[in-house]
Image (cartoon, rainbow, N blue to C red; front, side):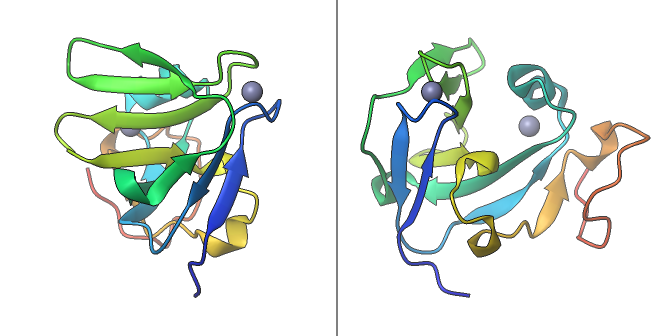
Length: 130
Ligand SMILES: [Zn+2]
Ligand SMILES: [Zn+2]
């Protein structure tokens, strides 16, 4: 699998990014906060070191919460863009659905699998973390 520069953008195209090199993690998250923040029953991310990601359009709007998490989104169209946490210093989780070429960033596992919606089935063959 080659991880040259991968591009992505939000629904309206205002927020654009370029991510270089190999992601730290690509996977699905089933936690309740991602579910509510994204409006989706499962959320998928590609994690990169912050210095490997360059925003090339409008900077995303940021929504910090008191647990040290900042979720960002397009201030124009509302697409969720990223998750950053003080527990994962210098890393950024980009919402996978924004990438142009999803064949280049395949999920490797599930996290918060214990919170998964019972009727949801996706990538069940991948390792599961609770
Ligand atoms: Zn947008
Ligand atoms: Zn989550």
